[in-house]
Image (cartoon, rainbow, N blue to C red; front, top):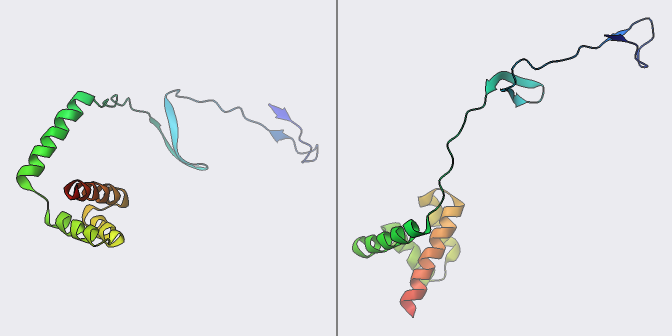
Length: 120
């Protein structure tokens, strides 16, 4: 298909090619103009749904294990920091031991809840 373009003079016609997709399932992977080779998308297994009954059983098991084993040394140290109202220091220690900020915040809240329960 040959057409004239307003940007180019009529003496140099612009050739337009219609692009067709050869494989319907294939998708180009990559960023914009640096596309990689065409790959087929895999069918993933459905994600598991959380069962509330199993969650209750699991929490019961965790409570029993916590009673028998007690707290890890870093958890006891975090609890000491929380007793002395050094929340930021407790968060830093938990973050160093657990590896991420989000997990550290959850652990700090869990241990502060334990201290509140003991204080009552």
